[in-house]
Length: 162
Image 1 (cartoon, rainbow, N blue to C red):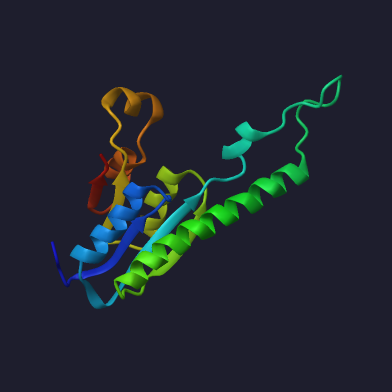
Image 2 (cartoon, rainbow, N blue to C red):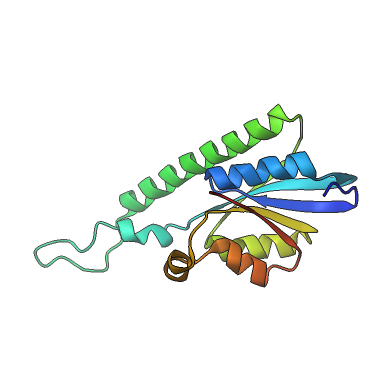
């Protein structure tokens, strides 16, 4: 699929082996215009998405909807460390192939943010990994790649896992 007419390619990574294989595929198979950019995108969940980890109401009659700032800060710090580890891994893969890339980190719902960033960058192509969920798991868990295929404004290459 090597082409020299791509100006902007977004590769979405989430730390999974499937997403890193998608990055490897893009590096091995795509050729950008000389002024083109390959953007490694990671979507970090917002603290509200991880609210399932909230310690919950204060026992014995305490307020039930109190946000614990220290808890939120700890979650955010942990997410930043995870994001940095994911980007470090992706950049190591790029470095091994002598390819310079741009990185972008956004916070929010991955499926929506991937589509949004791809549209904002006017990307020519989105490349992403996909876990090999069967139809039943995909129905209950959803699929970021399925959502993106149906909602992104450019072609999508999905590299499936096993």
